[in-house]
Image 1: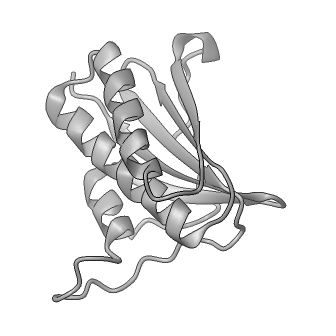
Image 2: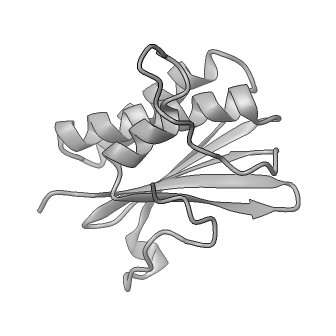
Length: 143
C-alpha cells in the first residue's frame, strides 16, 4: 500500500495554467457519493479522458467520498485536476484522522475502499492540516 502521509502527488513541470480544474462541494450525507460520481464523470468526459481511465477515476472518487462521509465529518470537497498526462483526484473532509486501509476480508463487501483506490491509481496518499485532511489519488493518462 502506498499510504505515506508525507507524500504528495507527483510534481510536474507544467505551469498551473496548463492544468484543468474542476471543484464541487457536497453535504455530509449518503447521496454525496452518487453526486461525486456524476461530477467526476461530467468533468472527465469534457476533458476527453478515455473511458477505461475515466471509469477508474469515477470509482476511486466514489470510494474516497464514501470514506469521507462515513469516517470523516463536515462538508466534503472534491477537486479534479488534469494536465496532458495525468489526473489528480483530491477529497477533503474536516476530520484529521488519517485513512488506514483495512485488511481485505473475504466475506466483506464493505471496508475495501482504500484497497480499491490503491489498485486503480498510480499512487495515493493523504495530507493533514489543523482543520481536516485531503486524501488524493493520481492517475496516468494513456498517451
